Length: 80
Image (cartoon, rainbow, N blue to C red; front, top):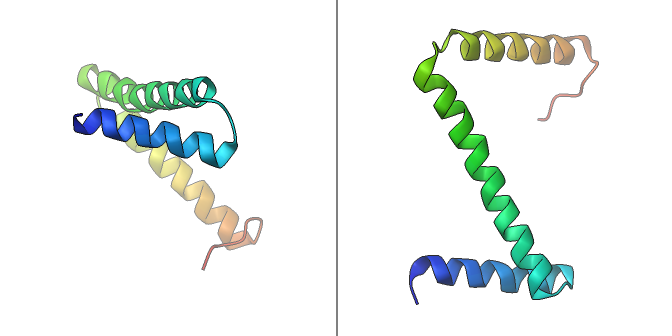
């Protein structure tokens, strides 16, 4: 058994025990989680391979500024 098989089987066993579901739903959940994780990384990397990072930097600065403003005004509680 290679490392990937061990990880997949361990994940499926953990999901079946934790959630009290059968093997098929747990395996489906693991496959969907892997596909979602891959897409969340591959999509932005594919975009950045053909575009400037300006859009990404601008978005992150704007989002960070908004979060800081919300915390400063007390609209959102800061996590200590």
